[in-house]
Length: 512
Ligand SMILES: [Zn+2]
Image (cartoon, rainbow, N blue to C red):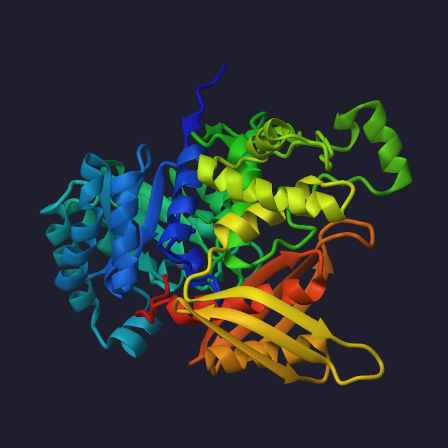
């Protein structure tokens, strides 16, 4: 048996992932994701960019205080103020606190964005790392846009920051441009041309613009990289980041030929994927590797026959390995609190007694109108009652009349900052009337970009699930809602999106 090298998994869902359009999360939501990452046992959680806003700072601080196990990283540009602010937030993680600082090293970034020479960039990088090591020995340096950086200069920067005390040096493909063999070549070059390279862990951070983020990350391992930066569901700017579940499951599934392992508890992957989708409103495409709805579905008859005889004829991974339980126990009107609580646990939810009570009341009311309650219904209940909590606006009651004769009219009662407000308006259709009424009560200026509605399960008694995408001041937010009445589901999604638009802070934008 050959020894497997343990690859460090650095999760940046809460930093890079949160930069996806519409993905911004509040403190409670970030904390929920962080707890899930703790269960997954990733090695590093990049909790945010503390100087970006007060909200980002508070979230990183709270995660550093609360989460045990993984190291907690805070991002900082190469400047004193950024690094000091990052430390003020991550310090609560004690020996697990990590400062991640960066500066761009490619000609195009240095000349067009930074307006700095090579030597100025080199000095700034060294100075930043030194300042960070004054606080903690856990310092990571990233050479932004490393893939488009001239290799001799990249090697000079890497050598200098290691000398200055960086324990990890990260090589990002910021723009998702590299090919696997080319990317592996960059890592090999650094291994062969940086004299002190063995004093630091080489890390990779790949974007998915050409769909190669996972392939590039894996190629880098053979060249000597020991840390992969990634996100749940591969979320992130533009086409996103290297997907955590894909890279981890590739290493696990092909352990026969890959001499690597990770510390990730893969059976928490599915719950993590689901939780992130629920919180951000960014749904996973059905054919997404590992966590997509069709990833384990064998629809074609010929496949089904094979699967029934032996799962391994067509499945290279088991559903259990990612925590997707196929125990389709259906709950109903007579299911008790115990069965309900157990099922929630199996689905990966760890809820307080108070939250279980709230969810159980909703479950009972749903079971009155719907004969069979599936896992997807339970996910929707938890999402609606517990995860998507109202912040500024709360939908209290509504009534809509529509049809082919009278003009559609919506009467909506909302709680706005604790005050009850009510109005009735006509519209082109029931959804239009409802949204107009809500818009009037909230005085929102947000523009509706997209509205989609679907059924959570089969059957005409299925719950409707609605997603609303809004734009306000150039920022996008996504809202979701579920209810057996699709107009109520639409209203909930709209109110959820307005809550996000009203409460998410404006922040400094960075790209890494
Ligand atoms: Zn990135």
